[in-house]
Image (cartoon, rainbow, N blue to C red):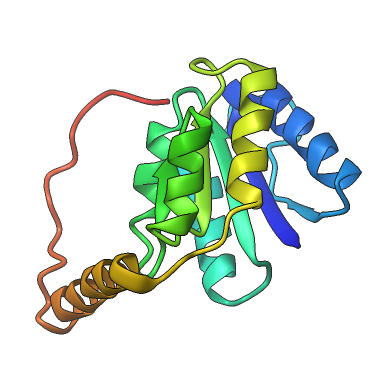
Amino acid sequence: MKVALGSDHNAYELKERIKTYLERHNHEVVDYGCYGCDAVDYPDVAFQVSLDLKKGKFNRAILVCGTGIGMAIAACKVPGIRAALCHDTYSAERARKSNNAQILTMGAKVIGPEAALKVVEAWINSEFEGGNSGRKVEKIMEKEQEFIRRGEYEKVDQPSGGSC
């Protein structure tokens, strides 16, 4: 499987551990950075990964920052993207099987590296099951398209502060 991987500086070390894990399990990894501990804004990475995922440049993606929250929020701003924040194997499995999440996000300051690799394993080895869940995912995607058509994606005031 071809998997994109991206992080900010808070999660650089975890991204590198995940990269090694994926490569050892014969996955092709596309590394979107960051490439060291210099400060990187997580939205820049999340947006690029999400846009390239939509273009079909890889099958799935994993994004990590301090909490995983910022990466999930940013990735989900790209229409058609479903990113799921998971710090346990059950949620990771359900993110794929029930929600067809194309992107897994995690927080390096929230989860240890060994637990993170177990989450990655559960997520990477799970497939979308469709069925009742398929109907629900389709409703979400249809509503997103309706919002786009009706122009309901309006500029909102930007909150101050906060980061991963």
